[in-house]
Length: 440
Image 1 (cartoon, rainbow, N blue to C red):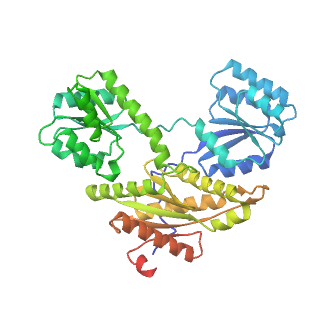
Image 2: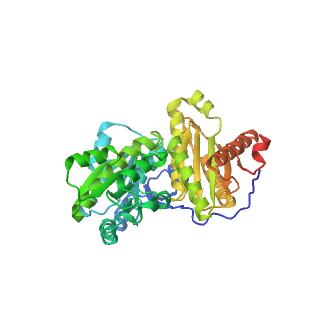
Image 3: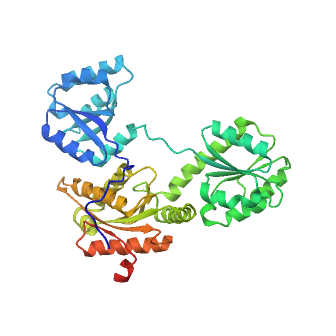
């Protein structure tokens, strides 16, 4: 086992510190909120005099503006000033109001001034971060990936061009006997497949693909000049989700592919995501882990699997209730999403246990990042139903490929290292070595 305090930082980790203005004369509130949301990559600049709001609005360089109504003597004047500023400009940052009072009249004034959210003190930081994330439009979804299986080169290239022009990634396979390598490496969201091809036809390929657990739900759209409706129904019974008759208009192709993918995206969000944290669930993460281990074997690259467990979580639930416990889990999931790279894969393994997969990383790099996460999490402030503040820590175990050469070996090793971290006193990280399992 290993734990080294002096390790180089992973240079490509995403720590995006975004700017938020807070209008308040309450220095304690400003310092507290700045400290808490800094864990999620945001920074707060405090404006003590609300009359400086006009200048702030003119610059509108922040992600959002928080307005503490409790620290303002004349709220009506401020609301009128804000409403006037909104009438003069359409490019103002979103407004979020904070108040001691939950009175309906105050809330209505905030809404009429253009408020996007309203929080009563003490501010629920996790909910606030969720709202700030909604305003951050800089992070875009990855483009959809489509695998085109078509033996006619000119036709395949045409489909690829049309899909790329629509903002999708498209890869072409001409030889139907060589589909599996591209399928496993590219891992498409949808397959466009010619029905009649030499050597291996589309129906055979669809049956083969459907027998692979990781691709059992992937949409397959057959392409053919066949216009017999009965034939379409027969082919769909063999594993196809739709049927396009050649020649295919570009607009029709893009519309069908996009509608299929949007529907799949919605369905997958229910099937593969944990409902509380929106992270990958246990089953989905295990599938991704197996895929990434296969990719590492083919490309001779590294990865690090991290298992994270909230320390003494049962005590949190017993002391403060399950609703407060859920807020702790949401806080950790939000921290992981904000502080890790977009290429890293995060999941909720069950209960209070989380997992993260660092792609193309060394154990030293991953250790440094997870240790920074551990420190941030330990400094986060959670509150009971009676507003009593408390803090929580986590322990973690790391296992690396190729030191552990299969998905099961990685999981077992990371779990054993996590067990050792708990036994060592919690709130620490252990890197698994080949001897780790023998010690447990």
